Image (cartoon, rainbow, N blue to C red; front, side, top):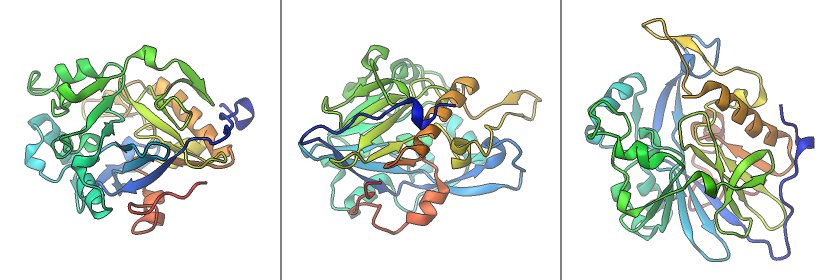
Length: 301
């Protein structure tokens, strides 16, 4: 496992650029942990957040959103997603766009939406962001173009507006930062890195961002892991037989996902680094209703 002794995060430069990150309520989803951590029982079902995040680039004022969580109008989801919803039911007391409005930001003013991946609990309602450019990881053009309804059995929905989407390529992720061999310096000033986060699904990306001038960081891990015990090594990724007897994992590429989880977990030993998972129930219970949510910000670590 990579340790904090194996790498250094980039040191701040004079007048270092940074970002401010705020959590957004974006729905609550029931996760059966038998699919999450090895050894969990069928009775272990927990209501977890599907977090989205507001990110403001301080030098320019550019406003981005990372992930959009769930959408309230369940009937809008295509039939293949409804089958998933039966196993993972959810509620949306407040959507990502409503959270932004409550925090004083109109969704139509959002310039960029970065999607960690295209699963239904992360893409929200793209129509609520009519002026935003969407950014997705490598391979997602093919996933969208072959999604529902082109493929009536696909759980990837063609809801992301292709004409306003920037499809990153593998060559964009050309920089090694900390424990991550493939990252993209989004603003070119060391304030925000998009991280190639393989394993969960093709094209999955995370965010590594500076949250102060003096060396504080936050890592937004998306679905790299669904429980912090996987990051600490206390638990292992679930790998269990389904109803037909086939072994299944919540990650498409289990071994690759485990290696990335180890890289993310190594950040826990690094001073001034804050790691947040998209479905982080412990973090949510500690912070819900507080200053980490817009209009507040997640304080620098």
